[in-house]
Length: 109
Image 1 (cartoon, rainbow, N blue to C red):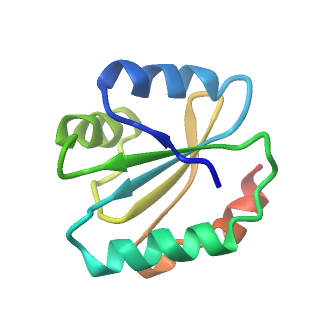
Image 2: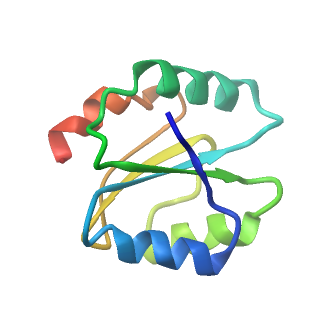
C-alpha cells in the first residue's frame, strides 16, 4: 500500500476535496503507541480496498493540529489509532483501536 503523508491543514483539505472524485482513508497513527503500530500493520496486511481508495497517514505526534481539524470537521471524537473513510467530503465509516478493519470499510464504498 502506498500511504500519502498527511502533514498539513492544506493537504488535509485537498484530501477531503479529492474525496468527491474517489474515496479517501485517513489513518490517525501514534508512532509511540503499540496498539497504533499493530492497527497500522494489520491495516496494511488486510488492505483489500479498490485502487480507487487513496490512503493518507497522519503522524499524530507531529501534526496534532491536523488531527484536531479532522475531529472538528467530521464531529468525531479524536482517538488513536483511528481509521476514517471519507466519501464526498463526508465520513461514512470510522473505527478506533482494535476495531480497525479495512475489510469492514468495503461495505461503505
